[in-house]
Length: 282
Image 1 (tube, rainbow, N blue to C red):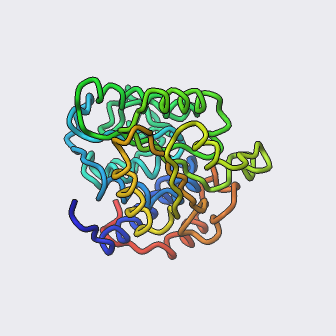
Image 2 (cartoon, helix red, strand yellow; image 1 turned 135 degrees about the horizontal axis):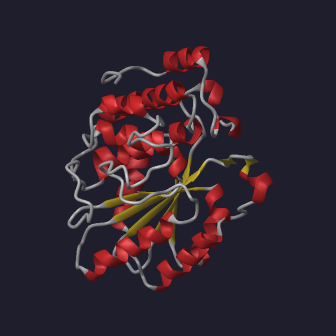
């Protein structure tokens, strides 16, 4: 694997954060908080880690697959897909408008390149990713499968059914990540339903667990490279990625209030003033 160009990756992160706030502002709807917090992860994944093809083949044979379980953070995924060549960045201006391909939660009937499942009904993404990974094993496809979930999503029972299944069947070509920002739509996760010792939980279910800071691109790249090195050893891999909701925009950072609220005109100006335009706005 080539050495990461951190200057380029940081510029892309700044630009994609600009894309996110502009997209959500334009339609006055969407989820900026989690999208901003996960931007460095998406940039590291799509611009350094994944073996993927923007020409997009739905069955994904011979390439790595990514599934977004917490589909409400679609702004960061759409912006990343556009910036990595899956479709024209100008289409980002259509986010959440009627009869467009960029709906609030990713879906397949719009045939948007890069999207293989409808998501956002929380708790389902890990099951899908395990199924895809098991299919790759049956097909003797050496590529990997990645999935991202939210921390509030860990309150869903289906997640833990999938956790048992994945470990029992030694799905060791899977790298799962949890966006561990401590916030969900109704408030801090610990006040809604505490996850307690999440690392110990996943380890007790038979997964190899790593932790890292998701808002430092160098650490994200290093952690994902390490996760790749842990595949093929009999256990699925789980990353607990610590992020801050709204990262990059000071008045959004750390608050569940920006889970699903769009900035107004003045708030957009403040956000854009903090985020450098590096490769050109759409």
